[in-house]
Image (tube, one colour):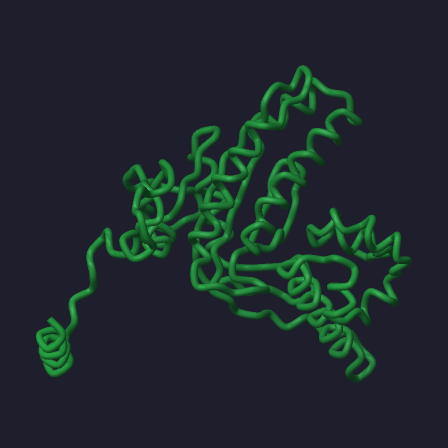
Length: 289
C-alpha cells in the first residue's frame, strides 16, 4: 500500500490516536522520516509508542537503501523472531453489516479497533494488522520483553473487558473471541507481511473460543507460567494444523501473591550436577542461622 500522508502512516501502524498531535505540529512524511527520539518526546509521544515508531522508521529507511542497490527493487529481508501472536475476532460481524448503515457500521468498527489498539499498546505490543472484524497483534516485535505471553494474555483480558463497556444502539454490546499462540515468525521489515505457524494457530484457536473468552496454546500457557488460571480443553483437531493440539481457556488472573509464587506453581526444575553449589548454600545458611 502506498502511503500518501502522515495520517495514513500512523493508522497503518496502529498509532492513529497521535494524528492530531502530528498535524498540529505540521509534521509531513518528509519530516516524519527525520524525527529523533527527542523530537517525539517533545511532541508528547509516550515511551513505548516512541520506541516503536523509531524502530519502524529505521526499518523503512533500511528497505529504501536496499531498494536503491543496483537500480532495481530489492525485496525486504525477513527477520526471524520468537513471537506471541494474538488474533482477535469480532463476534457476529456479518449480522452487524446487514443490520446497520455503512456509516454506523464504520463507527462501530472504528471504536472496536481503537479499543483493541489501546489495550495492545498498553502492554507494548504491536498491532500488525486490522482486518475490519479481526485484529492481529504481535508481542516480541519490534520491542522484546521477557514476558510476551503474559502481556498477550493480559491484553486479551483487557480487550474483553473493554468490549463490555462499548454499547451501541441496536447493536448492543460487542463480543470477541481471542486466540493466542507462540512460535517463530518471519517478519518483513517495513511491510505488513509475516509468515509463521503461530499466525495460523492463533487464528484457528480463536475459532474454537466461546464469545467473550480467550483460548491459548500449551506453549503460551507454559510461557505465562502461573500468572493465570486455565481450564484444560483437551486436544483439538484444528484445520491447517498438523496433529491434535492441546488447548486451554484462560479462566482469569492467578491468585498468587507474588511473581515468584506464580512462577513456581507448577514446580521448580530440579538442579542436576550442582552438589558443590547446594552444599555451599546449605553451609552458608547454617552459618547465618
